[in-house]
Image (tube, rainbow, N blue to C red; front, side, top):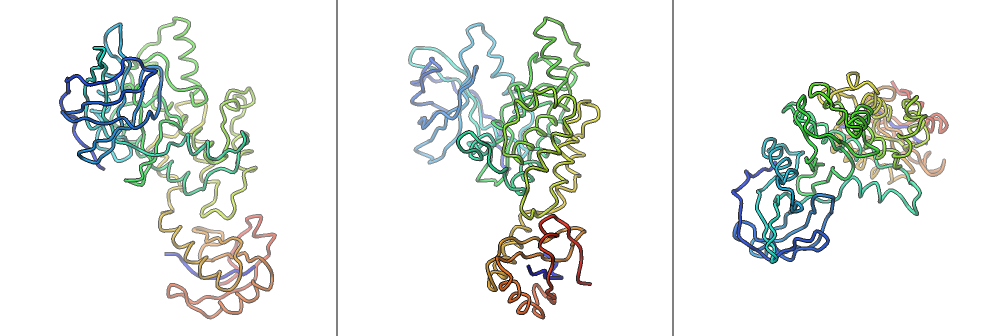
Length: 410
């Protein structure tokens, strides 16, 4: 093992357009996929169904003339009248447009099927893979694998907290945070929040049943039970933005652990001491040489999962966590540069550059064997990297593996 030191590393939005009401070939049966949508006087081809729920289906559509793609969310024809889901999501999205971490609403239109059935539709920004897909890719044969990288978890946490901080500042509660409602945008290189069908203004909750099982806060669980029993809940005693923090906390815990936690969070053990379960998940999921200590993420998640909603951190305060003190985009590049340099002297097993004490200002490199480590120590000492003189020494492998880092070079 060579221990080298010192080497200090160095929206788009569109306003909604008026409704288009021209008839187009489509389907009133939600089990069938429409062939075309006429949107703002132009025919768009349906390429695939991206998702289907109780009240709406989402399709990927493309415009041949403009060579562009988008998503259409088609709401099921409401035979009772009102089109509540459509009007709810449209009004929320129109009110909060412009944030880079919230899906963009391009416009709204009415689709008329060949059977004469009209359905309300939203034309939305087309996004890529969801966190749900990422979690599925992290399992094999139904068994959980290692969780996702700290970079990915940190990136998702920061992006969605930015979206929630904005949303909560505008007075809204998302009320349905779950992996399927967080999608990655390859174009904007960030995660975005979607699906505002259950959202409501804080203090004016007009939705009885909120959140999805497995991501539901204790107070939402209680409120849903009361609503099911026919007990009316006063507006000012309803759920608050704290339910969103709970949902995000579970999502981040699943991303880190690589495990779906629905059964875990429903268990009596979780209700009695969720903090110990979080500690166990972090202790049992060893991250090889993370760029930052994982306890920053652990502590942030625990602050989101407090049973008392008034004690949970807000999105605004969560963004002040030390987890976000490291710009991973730059840091990952530095790690790659250092690894490339160190690989010139032997096979590198792992590499760590602490950003804070203990070990700040040092580079820890684990080589495959002692001869490579000795060669690296000999050739690296006296060299300069990023304008700084390198002094290389050896460091106990057992201490490194256990995370015991300290400055051995003054």
